[in-house]
Amino acid sequence: MDPDHKDARYHQIRTAVFGMVVLTLGMGIGRFLYTPMLPIMLHEGLFTFSQLSLIASANYAGYLFGSLLFSFGVFTRLAHLKAMLLAVALITGLLILFMAIVTVPEVVILIRFLAGVASAGMMIFGAMLVLQHSHRPWVIASLFSGVGVGIFIGNEYVIAGVAHLLSAKTLWLGASCISGVLLIVLWLLLPRDAHIPQEMAQPLKADKSIQWWQLALLYGLAGFGYIIVATYLPVMAKGLGRVS
Image (cartoon, rainbow, N blue to C red; front, side, top):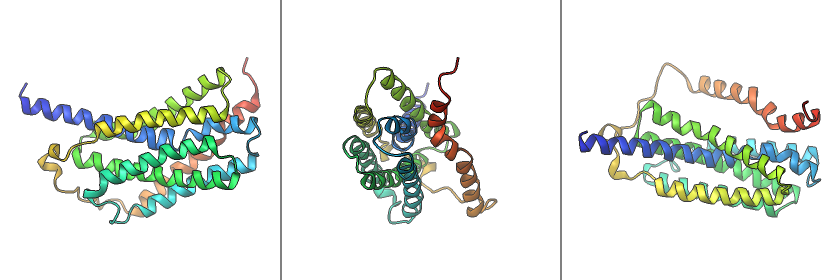
C-alpha cells in the first residue's frame, strides 16, 4: 500500500473515532445520562417529579440557546474550534460533577441549562472539526453514532450501578470520572491541522435545494417525536413494575 494512502486512511479512522468520542461525551453522557438518572433521583426523594421535569426542560432550553449562540461566526472561526471544543468538553464534565454535589432545585436547573448549552457547543464544534478533516460519509456517520454509543454506555452504567445499590450521588460522581476519561481521549485524538487534506481547505458549498427552516422543522419534529417519551420512559417503565 502507498505510504501516503496508508497515512490518509489512518487519519480518516482517527478522525472518525474522534468524532464519535465528541458526541459520546457531549450528547450521550452530558445530555442524555439524565434520562436513566431521573427515576433514581425521584425514588431517593432528591427532587419532586415537577422539579425533575423543569430540570429536564432547562436542559433542552439550554441546547436551543447554545445552538443559536454558537451559530455566530465569532465562535466558529476555524482558528478557535479546537479551543472552543475543549472548553465546552471540560465544562460538560464539571457540570456532571456538580450534579453529584448540588441538590438545590434552582441551582440544578441552572446546571442542566448550562449543560444543554455545552452539549450544543460540542455538537457544533465537533461536527465542524470533523468536516474540516473529512467529507467521507462513514466518517460523518461515526461522528453521529457517538450519541448512541454514549446513551448505551450511560444506560448500562446506571443499570450496573442500580444493581450494586449505588446512590444517585455516587452515580453522578462515577459519570464525572467517565467524562474525564473521555475528555483525555478526545484531547489525544484531536485532529492536527497538518493532516487537513487539500480538498478540505475550501468550505462546503451550501445545498440550495433545502431551506434552513425546512431543516429546523425536520429536526424539531424529530425531537418532538422522541424527546418527550424518551425523557420519561424509565419512569413509565418503573411504574409498570417487573415484567414477568
